[in-house]
Length: 455
Image (cartoon, rainbow, N blue to C red; front, side, top):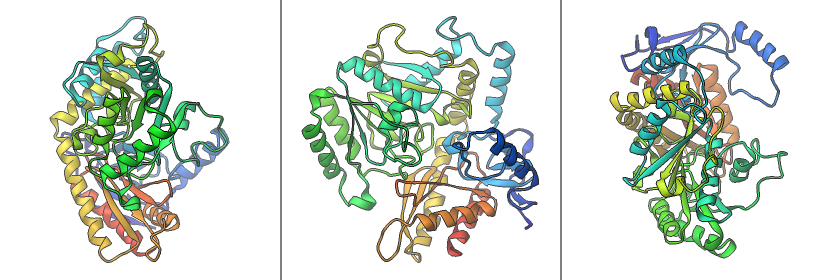
């Protein structure tokens, strides 16, 4: 197999180091011999419970490509699951981390604090929706931040119950597994799970046909009857669901939930782990309908690939836990904080919010055109550079996970990294780096469409 399809030549100033050539280039079978050798080592050394989407090992990445150890250059339409929005090894991030690692790598903010943690908190307080007085706390992962958001809400309200939604994904820890809807591979065999977690129906326009207010009324009715507002500490929801299938709730659903939560003293938590930081064409997905959450959970795109997460919210809620009640040895690590400040500068200075909108317009146009003649494309949805294609049986409308798997596998074989998702396993999601050149994005979409046509 030999494909050598050059698109654009180099990366611009907002992108990556050393002008990594932006091209799809396949010089060996995938995986190549070096990747196969490394996979043998992986199988012998790493738990088999840790899977991989593609059996190729990365050597370099930047802009819109991942170069593997065999010299193959793959088009990246996944961004490490929405993490590298500013691209891999983004220049500002690299410079900031290099300086910080030379200064110090760790002191623990709870022992001897440092200004970059405070700077990240200030940036989050400024950027998240709402102009109210805010506070932030930093952690390591999205799941850890979700757990802390629930802790904060329970401390503030003195209530215990928490409501999550159908198709939700909130993490892999014990509490966040309870919040997550999908059993395989996230929950099966790992219980018992945390108590006082309840589930309400999500607005899923493609499948339920309800308007936003209708779907909200259905969810609120269930909450009031089965849980009771007086027992409820928090409602937690992804403004656009991630792993659940990039489900965009019908217009009016989120505002109605926020209004009900506020009227009943319930903390409204927006899990913006996947949707945050320019991904949806706003800095945060909550902005699309103008909702102002009480707490916002962030991670993934916050720090250019370094592990960092946060909870940001109303000062009176964030300050409710007792002193010392929040923290963690590595939370707000100085390297990650330096990276986050540089990544946030990149989002703002390099027009990546606007770039996300342009990327989304391109993907939606291509697949809606295809859907006009291919009934297997049941739905094309999303916002900004967070777009999903849901595949169905054209006769029944039932989810077609087998077709989804074939398309993804064929795209992988041609050097395009795509990810699947969805409760029913029938969704391909597009999460390209916001730094991907337009021609490279078009070529990646060509490959996916060709894979669909051949499936």
